[in-house]
Structures are given as structure tokens and as C-alpha cells.
Amino acid sequence: MTHALIVEDDADSAETMAALISAQGFTVAIARTMRDARRQIVLQLPDLVLLDLQLPDGSGMDLFQDAQLVANSEIVLITGHASLESSIQALRMGAADYLVKPINMKQLQGILSRVMRPSAIQAELASLTAEWEASGHFGHLWGRSAPMRRIYEQISRVAVTAVSVFITGESGTGKEVVAQTVHDLSRRRKHPFLAVNCGAISPNLIESEIFGHEKGSFTGADRQHQGFFERAHGGTLFLDEITEMPLELQVKLLRVLETGMFMRVGSTVAQETDVRVIAATNRPPELAVSSGKLREDLLYRLNVFPIELPPLRDRSEDVPLLAQHFLTAICEREGTSKNFTPGALTRLTAYRWPGNVRELRNVVQRAYVMASGNSINEEWLPDDPHGANSAYSTTLTPRSAAPSSAPATAPAASSASGGPSITIPIGTSMAEAERQLILATLEHFNQQKERTAAALGVSLKTLYNRLKEYAADKVVDVTPE
Image (cartoon, rainbow, N blue to C red; front, top):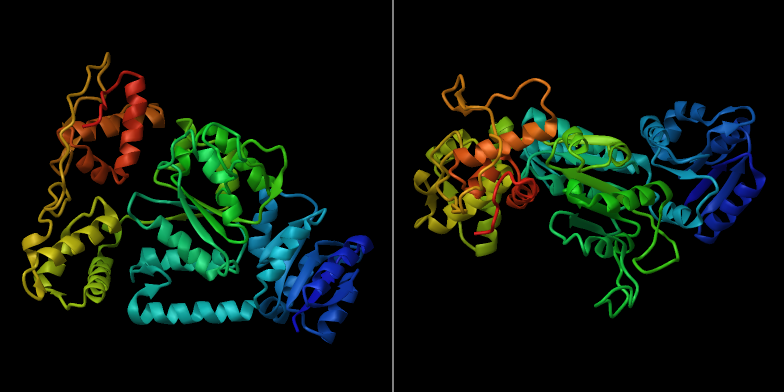
């Protein structure tokens, strides 16, 4: 039977927690001092420790010096207030989670449902590491390069905790795959993982989709609707392209993260939620804040544990491994067998991949379809190592840009590598620098938005969102083709 130890000097709080834990089928012991806690640990090593840091005869931190306890017991801190510092402190000391006084019993129930011995988790991580060394496969991720090894180390460290994760990186680098891997290695793995692209939902509907709505709360609301926070209860909610979320909704999201409470649209009754939030963006976070796309206080709340994904061009040694992985999956699905020639793998490795892993997957799928035999050669692969002329890209022909009252960029010049460049004066705001780069790249690719998005490392939808912002300021015409 699973055994829990409550280290808490508040008798009422300790007894209340003990009653709930007992009702969940645990055996329970209570210690009101550090001395009692050490004695109880010797008598029976607990599977779960609920640890108040402020005790009459010392600090609960001292228990983290017990290597046997840390290796075999899940430790949950009990803190007097919710703060970013509490999350960071919990992570650094090896705690799995933390509870805020007064104890929320539903959150405690959630923790009880996820109890796992740290030694079991470490054994699982060791197995994943061994698999990665043998095959290059870690969770849902593939790669042997040094940048990816660092990502695996970060995932291993943060997955077993409850802290918020903020993933950054260009479009197509695999941010959702990282989030899924974090979830699958966490104690929440038996509960839902839901992914939401904040840029793909209408601003008029996004609040209803995330928080839900009551019947009759607006025109067309003919039934009650559960939002993502309700449907992901106990699990993980991945908010992709968080900078595309309207600012007024970011305020409500911040409150949910701080209090664990939310309300459906049209309701006056607050509901509790037990969800781990992982957010992601393809914008530099500081740029998103300075350009007014992300609230600074929300960034601080989300960015407890940052993970920055490298673009594929910075880990080109992983390209053959990824390409073979995608090809193997296609062959298994289609019941066939095809292989890359050495020349094909050389061509793939040399290409710059402006669309990153997503672009590589699409190239492999197209090459598979076009290859007439069992061998895939260079014929249907992109031939420009700098990524300017993809053999498979689809061009868009937009209407000409509307004239601007001021030049969009500084005069173009040639870079040291011979390619075009722009000059941006020191002191230019980050938002203005981004605007100039986007418009100059769009002009360089003759208004072809798909190639522009790929070169910038952003999604086509993100590019359209930026151009709509500039159109509002009469910078450019983005009338859809």
C-alpha cells in the first residue's frame, strides 16, 4: 500500500490532508517537527512526502539532504503563497510539485493520482538515454547532435516537475513534439494532452474554446461547451503561438495560472482546474513583449523553464537520421520498401531547410511519391543548399504592394556572402526591425509569401498576421490571392 508522510506543524491542516489521503487508499503518518519527520522516515520510507518548509525546529529544506528519501519519495512542497520563486525553488530542490495554503483539496487529489517513485522515473529516463545512444531516438524526438542532446537533458530535468515550460524556436522545429515528450515523461501522462494553436482560432471564439461557455451566453451557443482547460484536467495544455492570443485574453490566462480558477463565458461561477501549461512561440519573447503582442507579466509566469529549439540548419548532421525516420514511417504505412541513395542523403544534408523539420518531412513524402523504383535519388530533392530555390515549393502571386509614405527598409546592400542585406540603425525598436526584415524579405522573393515565410522560419499564417498588422498602418497590401 502506498505510504504518505505529512510534515506540517499546523494540526488542523495536517489532519484534513490525512483524512483525504486515507480516503484515497494511502497509509498516512504525520510529523509536526523535523525531528518527528526523520523518525517517521526511518520507521517507514514514504512514497509521498507533503513538506512544509517552515517548521518549529528547522527548515524542511534539510530533508533534501537525505539521498535515500529524494531517490525513493515524491516530495511536494507546501508553501504559503503562489509565486514564480516557489516554482523555481521547487525545481531546484527536486520537488515534484507544490501546494499553496490553504490547501486546495482537488489539487491534492490530483497529486495523489499521479504519485510515482523518483527512482522509477529515473530508470525510465536512463532507458530512454540508452535508446537514444543506440538509435538517435528520444521520446518523440530524433537527433544525435549536440544541440539536441542539450534539449533531451532539459526535457529529462523538467518533465518530472510541475513547473511551466516555455518553448521557443522557428516554425517547423518541433515545438509541439517537445511538449508531447515532456507530457509523456511526466506524472500527468495518464491524463489528456491537448494542443491549441492560438493563431488558428478566430479572436471571437478563442475565449470560448479555451475556457468554455454556458448555453445561451451568446448567439449560437445552443448548449454548454467545455473548454480546453476542462478537457485537459489533470493533464497538459499546450498553447502554441501564444503571442497570437488577444491581450485581453492573456489577462484571463494569467489569472488562471496564478489561481487555478477560471470561468466559462457567460458564467458567474468559478471552476477549479489542475492543468500543466506549456506555451510556445516562434517570435523572440522580448520582441513579442516590446511589440505589444505578449504581456510582460504573462511572459514571466510562463517562462519558468525555457527551452529554445535549434533550427535544422544548425544540426545538419541529424538530417539523414530524420529523413530515414520519415521514410521508414511512410514505407510501413504503404507496405513498401524504398531507400535513399548516398547522393540523395548528401543533397539533403547540404540544403539549408528554411522550413526546418516540417519542410524535410514534406520533401521526403514528395520524393517517396515521385520515385519510380525502390531508390530515391537527387532528382526530386531541393538543389539549392542555401534554401532559396526549393524544388517542391508552391509559389503565391500576391497583388502588388500598396505604396508607403516611407521606405519599408534601408537601402539594400550586398552582404559578405554576396546575398542581399538591409541596414538597420542602432536604436531602432525591435518591432520596427522585424517589420523591415519581413518586408525586405518579401520584396526579395518577389512577393511570394510561402517562400518568404520559409526563409524567415515562420508559418504562412504568422506571416499573414504580421502583414495584416502592417496593412492597418498602410504599410503593405495583403489582400488574399
